Amino acid sequence: MTHSETVEKINRLKKEKNAIILAHYYTRPEIQDVADYLGDSLGLSKMAGETDADIIVFCGVHFMAETASIISPNKKVLSPAPDAGCSLAESVTGYDLKKWKDANPDGIIVSYVNTTADVKAYTDYCCTSSNAINVVKSLPEDRKILFVPDKNLGAHIMRVTGREMELWQGDCCVHEKITSSVIEDALGKYQDADILIHPEANCSHDEKTLADDRTFFYSTAGIINHARKSGKQRFVIATEIETIHKLKKDNPEKEFIPITEKTICAQMKKITLEKLLHTLETEEGEVKVPEEIRKKAMLPIERMLSL
Ligand code: 13P
Ligand code: SF4
Image 1 (cartoon, helix red, strand yellow):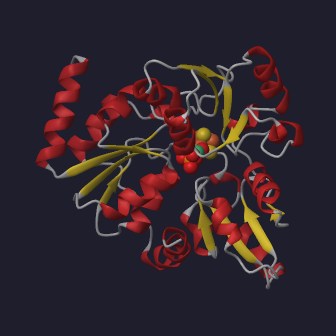
Image 2 (image 1 turned 30 degrees about the vertical axis):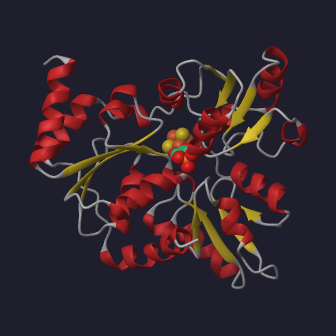
């Protein structure tokens, strides 16, 4: 089947089945192009709650499809790659978090959305990289905060808010490659460019990196927003490389340079156009959370979405 025949079939099936395709910015360009909605973790969660489609085909890693299923339990949530994992989500289990919580009965648990439903079930507040700072700022000053699982995002939040938190020691295997020395090289090499950095990056709490007036920390959607609004012509993109597809589409006259060629999330790339078509044809790959866990996991998500 040719590329255009595959796309045509996907579009036809989507209409017939009243399905919507949601895709994260880190998926392959051809997946981004066929999506009804392209977004970051926060945007995708919101869209999963708002859509009136009967089927959500979620093009993202497993925890994202799971979050959509928690938010929209009456919809069929399908994943074209149910085996697409995430190093952050895999770094902490519900059992680990329960033990941590039991040892700190006064602590408030804040979990990054990159976690399993089991972990969310033991969580007080969920957050994404778009709203993490606001979530932490909204918490009572006299309470201890336990943050899971991303140590880099956690350290970044501590720097920006001035709040102390205890951090789980997880990391994203992709953003971990973005070190302060890589940023320093880019600052020297591209003197006219802004450096747009995801807070999962290894350098997100490095004082020198934070102090430079050409470095900006944003979620993926924030990076896209900055590039659109800025009068600058050149940007170094310090997040997953496929974000550049959307950036170039939105700003054909501007230049986007990947911080390294290594920031590739192999898990997101498991979703291909062929798998997407197969999912729509067969309705295989349903992601569902047991109701008891779902109800508990929904509470911290609701708190996050209501902020
Ligand atoms: P955002 O989509 O919130 O920017 O998070 C990035 C990420 O790593 C998702 O897995
Ligand atoms: Fe997980 Fe990192 Fe891939 Fe995002 S980029 S899905 S945090 S491994």
